[in-house]
Amino acid sequence: MTTTGTQTPVQEHKSHLRTLIGTGIGNAVEWYDWAIYATFAPFIAGALFSSADPTSAILSTLAIFAVGFVARPFGGFVFGWIGDRIGRKTSMTFAVALGAFGSLLIGVAPTFESVGVFASIMLLFARLIQGLAHGGELPSSQTYLSEMAPKERRGFWATLIYTSGTVGILLGTLLGAVLSAALSKTDMAAWGWRVPFILGGFLGIYALVMRARMKETEAFEAETVKEKHDPIWPQIFRHRKQALQVIGLTVGLTVIYYVWGVVAPSYASTTLKMDRGAALWASVVGNIVFIAALPFWGRLSDRIGRKPVLIAGAAGAALLHFPMTWLLKDSPWQLAVSMSVMLFFIAASAAIVPAVYAELFPTKIRTVGVGVPYSICVAAFGGTAPYLQSWLASTGQGSLFNVYAVVLLAIGIAFVFTIPETKGKDLTH
Image (cartoon, rainbow, N blue to C red; front, side):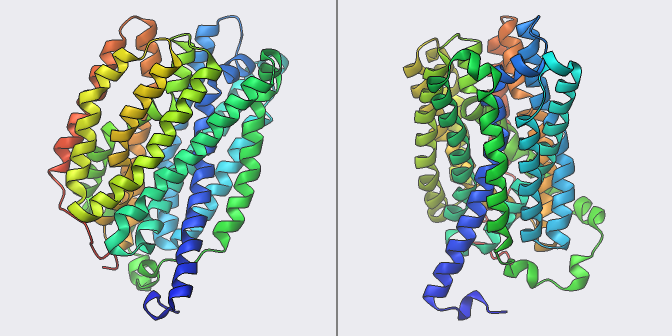
């Protein structure tokens, strides 16, 4: 095999470009498939659940959003095992294919009016498939990208995960805004909401082709056959401290990100009664700020270290969560400002946790070591966040959710002090 050290600058540039494009496109498609569910939740509720009780329908839709997360730990283990035994590239390729299939199922699901509860069951099945795929996509792509990155720029390279993911979310949001403006409410409810899911399926096929052309990481190929076939569970137990650290670092980030980065437009339109199209455009502004902030924090972590950046991001988000919640009432500009401010600080952790996670584990357990605890945490906390937020708001106890989010951020800060500084760590050992 030709190593990076013997490549010409042109060859190395092409190799890096192929890595970034293949990882980024596939990750964007996975996030697009996952997030458009939240964006189009009101329409899904109307089409695939009984219209007799709209409040129950939207809560049921959000409950399936949470149930989809149940499959993520299984995806983290299955695809993590594939990544650590067969290869990072293979794991990433299978994950994006499965995610595309789940998106297509939602796009062609029959309505509740035509087949009754079977429509809701088909939605549940599709979300479980997507949960399995997404549970494998993130640890696989994070590990792959971290191992391919130059160690002195790994923090900056790691920002591609949330940058490409947010581009996927932004694409779904923009598509929602355009469809809402171009189609009548009747057409949106009848068939317009299906367009993003069917498009996601076809985008997944393109990402599948791109990933099939990528090469495997040197860190994985440098392992011996014995190392690649060491029993998984003893290694997971041996690295239980690192697994707990992954959960601790993720718990606050996943809740605060889903609140402000994913479900804020739907929350504003359904709970705060904001115009849906205006809420989506406000969300576009916030996500653009997020994308711009990611490389700033990534580069900063390569200079001053991972830990100061993690602390700064979580502390800023915790301090500003209540003020930004109070600011957000019924105006699109309020949503744009509050999302922008919060996502700037959320970006600090989001930018570099892919690198931090990878730097905590040795090569032979890196994918599954990250994937299982990360997916469990996201399922238990991130997956339930939209439902919990909507339910507490409907009972007049919305402030309790805000306290919950800030406490989880404080827990994340505490866990930062338990990890070593890993800036510039060599991942081939």
